[in-house]
Length: 205
Length: 137
Image (tube, rainbow over all chains, first blue to last red; front, side, top):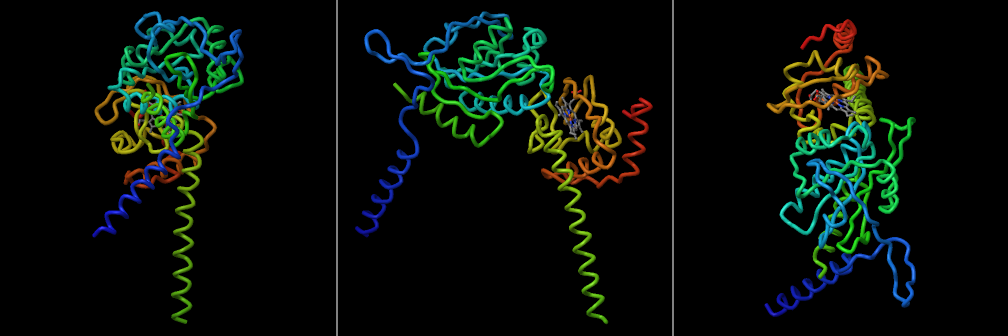
């Protein structure tokens, strides 16, 4: 009897040790680092932005104050990977629906076609609301520029299917505008791992 | 003699069987390349934007319309399993009659779908009707 008791404690601690080995308690801050004037580290930071969402609201850095968010780049008429990445974004949305500290931000890389009205319809058909998930349009050059800060690509390319090229990457940004994790939004297993990263970030103090 | 016949029957059986799975393998490959981005690997589509193919009543109710949708696409409202969809699907013109037949048979036998196998001559007729733009639905 005693033996079983001890054995189960050993097993339990072993399992716990395994788990903490697999899942770091904090996520790294990604991107280039600089050294500031006082010798402190300056991390890669998402710059200021201002776009318009599906409910005609201005969406800027202040919209995410104190919150983490997942960003991606897509366009409505996209015949290739977008429906897949949108489906994975929807999974993340549904999983963290009741956690007010996580929002979603989808940028259109074809803003001249993806008007506020078109984005509104798209969001409604996905069954989501702007208070959780912003779909933004705006100045095309500004959107393409900020894609670089998210380590993503976005460009107009007549030879690409649908006329626009972009990566299907999902990017996790923390409340200090630092990029903390990313994944391939077309690969459900990579998104599984990404969702654990999101939880890790949300657990950080 | 009897043994030989049994062996022959067995061989033919295996041959036919492998032929059939081959067809769906081909359909599956085509599905992955041409349909999966939108209708998803598990045929579930995307919420209110893209209708499912898994368990879709549309396949049962309007089978004659499917080859045409694959080749010529579809614009306008359609109802699948009681839900209305209104996103344009672009046609995939480069698929041949055979390829379309194989894709449909893959869909008809996947994700719990248990729909009749379609034959190439029927698909050909349905595609002809489609060209004349006399949509059967």
